[in-house]
Image 1 (tube, rainbow, N blue to C red):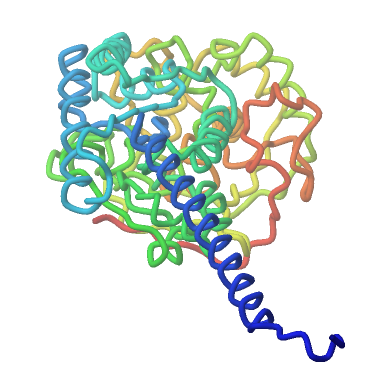
Image 2 (cartoon, one colour):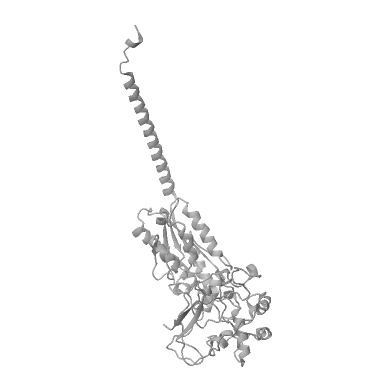
Length: 442
């Protein structure tokens, strides 16, 4: 029988059917494997789920009534934060398991925070703030306050790295990010705006969000826990209200609204006076630093200004700023020999330059008759102390420095390096005034 007469009995059709079946079998196996992987992933995620509250405690500060209660207030604040997060998850994040644990990490400079609360009158002793955070940490197993110590960006750096670490941790279901006071965190968040990961983040607001956050609020969820965190920055002068007329005191001005830098060597001063004119009280190397500062190039004197102690309330003043909105200290002429001499007298800067020292008794000298030249020299001494509110300060009567006196325009450091009392952003400032900010009473 010839080959062309052998019947194929539909072999080709049967082979094609077998090929199709093999293909469907492989598809089925792949689908089963994908489902198995998802089940494993879901199991792992639901095995130890948690949400993280990551908070910069240098700017997100609890309300005064909590801090004033010390350890008991810390426990109460922890409970309020825990309840606030639980309620938010229940109302806004239904996909998160009900038994999800809450982990909280607060990073801050403990000594700086305690001193500034004490000086502003929130507490009558710095140790009360330490007791508060001890109560906060001890109240719940997964709640911790971490003291980062003094230094620029210490809290920021830790928070940034922990934020990135937990974004890729599938056990972490959500991050509550307490950072409204610092534009630096806005730059971190900008990296993820085109990513679905934004749904895993809720921004916590204490003080109002800084301006660089505004474009991000349409990308990220945000919330505020009422009566838990301060909504105003701390006023370190703690001046009396305008309705109380006191001799040789000016009416209260609203607290500056600028960024609160966590790097504030002044708040570590041990003296009860808010602004010691003898800088060595704060820093054993301050005398050398100040001596170098006084050798800086002499600046042109501005037009004469009225004495700090005034009988009429200050209604408004102009604050010079450069094109970046940074405050520029008015130039002053001073005698460096006078600066060195006055430093030894321990004069009260606030009394002589602002006229509203509230310390009674004050550990610095008030009973002294100042000459015009001595006043100029004392202004220079005060400027050797960094302003708590940095370059964004909008207190028209501020006597402190808003730039490092020995820095050079364009250079973000000086020869003191990391030991300089002034924060990095207070170096290399453009000194060209392009506008002024007019600040009045509210």
